[in-house]
Length: 212
Image (cartoon, rainbow, N blue to C red; front, top):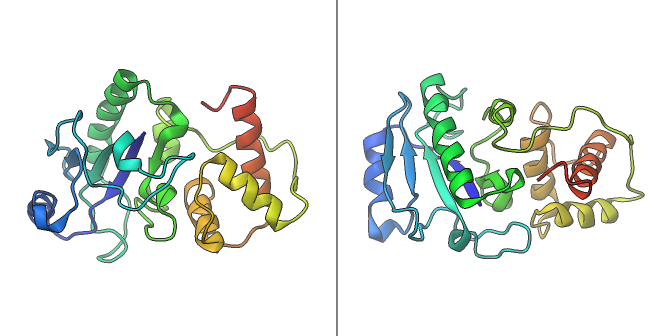
């Protein structure tokens, strides 16, 4: 897996200091500054403490099966805003190399909020997943929804959401995380027809071998 985070700190220097502090028990393989500078903090073959308590597609120890990339960004705590263009341009070749070298499927290029929905909201609704998808580096949001409301009830939706990969132990937070990734224009944690249709299409595409 490859997990994208934001630092939610005001200063990159402080972020590096914290990510290199053993007592903080948090680290990542890479940090990308707002001006596009890439800093390697942990060798890729080593385990980094970037995901914390997390889950994705049956894996309960995401740190043991992933590479983590931190984006220098103030986050929601210090004034959430769009990501810097130079930062994104530095991210693309790094992600491209990593997914090719480790044969990471697009469905396993995720945000921190995807693997830890009850605790995290980064990189947040303004992260340009659609642009990353244009390079073939993550799954795109489905453009065509074949069925408007395919699930009979919320329980069926949660089962499908877990099948797709999410931890649904906190259902409301799991739906928020799904919305943040797949329908960022409206995040309310409520299961509506559009959310159902998007999830169904993602699963349908995966079963057809399209969404890998």
